[in-house]
Image (cartoon, rainbow, N blue to C red; front, top):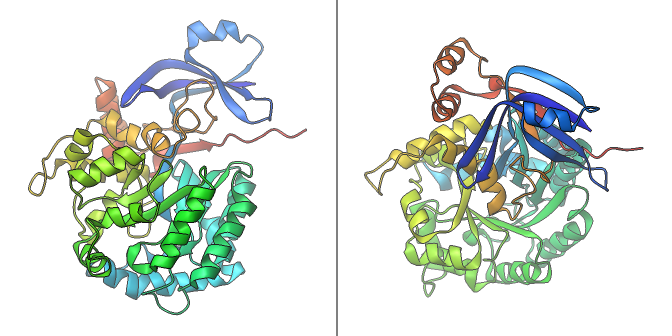
Length: 429
């Protein structure tokens, strides 16, 4: 076992943070050798219970749960910062041409290595990621994640129509590849697989039906896709499925709404859609930097809370503009405040932080596993330096409450705040 002494942040409940000014985090292996949180609390109360455990002292630092990114595209590393007139032109002019490269295993491997290093540099210890339509891209990403002991969920993109050569797959072969990848990777070490229809316009009815059949056959596998991001996209879906009540209902029609189903964006939806999300156990991946960058719209937090479905935060790189959870949390604050197209509200810093940790873990069906530091959780955590920059040091020194401290980190923080990222690695003999 090992212990860490620092200020410690964790969650006792939804958006309810606990802050130990002088805390102790004790980690140790379970029967499989995986490092789990054994105890957490006030240093003076806990230290006597673990007299023989080595303690690493981290004065002036904050230990917090590793961040959970609910939606990210690893092939879009080089798409970040590409100008576009909106979602659909951006896909056509930048995203699809870049994703063609991932048919080459060597290209996929170097991108996967960079991608995972960037996640860890930004304190992200769990992610739900899109690969491309090429199985090689999935093997590269999950293989690299396995080497790093990262908890990562990913999937081969299904897209058999309305897509250019080089990224379009074949209906049946895409489903065969998906099932083979499920059997190869799902549940191996800390890895998971996600059935990944890109979005309704890119998948034929036969492919969506097949995806739903796989989702039924493998109920512990995740599902990930996009819904109601952009009004042009919604109009396109309406042309394809004129009898459908809504864009979201098309996924329901094919059996793709259930627990462990995560849909990015969920911007242009109504209360009937929200109730459908709630009743099926599906969750929304809110992607604020992407939505602001592409001009897609604003997630309605008041509507989501009124109806009561699950959600969490996501970077959505590369429509999203940063890997940094601090940038994502700040953008979510902006989105919440917007009050012209929906009710505006001020999201508190504990709520924002929860959305990117324990709340996102709950949306994934991994509550009590990742995203928190309660006893029994996997020991994924970050060491934060609240003096990482001169301005941040000046601001955090004046914080009179936990909310003021966390909000200063959200507004002024970036990758420089992440001093260390610790992963729950299995011990080997």
